[in-house]
Length: 174
Image (cartoon, rainbow, N blue to C red; front, side, top):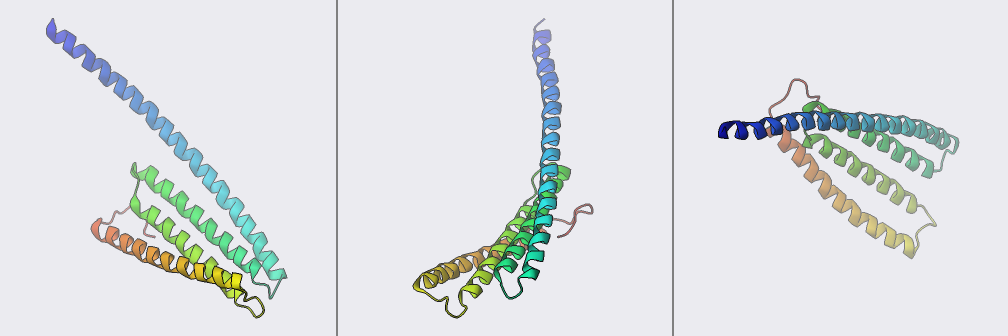
């Protein structure tokens, strides 16, 4: 009699555990699918926006601001695509994988470096050098230094991850 009572709660908890596990797995898969679709839509809209910005930049030859905006949008689309890749890898692996997140961070940092560089080059044109521009330039140089250190740290982390993790046949190398 005693053993039947102790087996019954275990059977119920196992059944509840299996049902809840399947339900949560379905919710997780659905969330990944919705997020993937939204990211794909953002990538498509960003690509169209980048194409329009490129056309505008081509029409305004000699003005570098539209080129900065175009470069920024193209790199933003690249980041969204890498995030979509990260979601896909996480979905396939069943767990979060560090390397794709580091690659997204690396792209974001490089994107910011390029935008700062292009903006500071534009500020150094003749007649635009003011005390306000000097302050902006100084803060931009500090930001570039911090971003440079961050880029080196992320590249080193990716290197260490690739060196420590045995290669998987199904994982794409970035």
